Length: 243
Ligand code: NAP
Image (cartoon, rainbow, N blue to C red; front, side, top):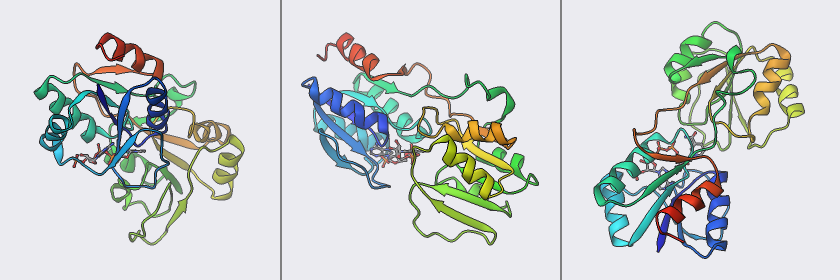
């Protein structure tokens, strides 16, 4: 039975390997916005054309199950998967790494609901390090003094007073301390991406007294089955009769 794995994350790549090793037939799908390491599964690249396009894809390719391992902030893809799977009665599970709400310093941070609120909270706070990815950056264009760190940059114009830093995690605590110090950062803006790859920045911010503004995760669709680990995905597939 064929599994569609919606990926674009480190967890997605690991899960693809595990599922293939377990003998599953897996199609891994990525949006294609950044260069991606290949895994052992079959791959496809690019959007499906909304929920309706995804439903067509599921039908045409006889997909029995969908595992959504997209990033916690890839809300549109998750919503489309929810809609398409509900329409066709295809089982869907979301693999989502735990967020940082339980982090030891979480109560020190300014939690905001979205990027507009984050930009408002950062206004007047001094030089900002933005670690929110590339796409949300226009929300912050009103900030005068910014260092924006992105995994890949595609040369879009940024306001005067902005600098782009192109680097991809994981980042060590020493690296983050050095960056916050040398760039004279007063405020760090982050998404609640969770996981370990990029967590050192909040520890470094705590150590240096840098203020943290944290954008909360979008709410998943009500009733969506969610798990936090590869092992739980395998258990869930077993319960769906995919083994
Ligand atoms: P999004 O807003 O939820 O998705 C926008 C559109 O991109 C979707 O409607 C879909 O197009 C297409 N798409 C997204 N994920 C796809 C996938 N795995 N396979 C095929 N099409 C996909 O997502 P996003 O925030 O732009 O993120 C895009 C991708 O980057 C995701 O796969 C995500 O896992 C990865 N990523 C995102 C972040 C982040 O911070 N948002 C960070 C790291 C990695 P159609 O409607 O045409 O189907």
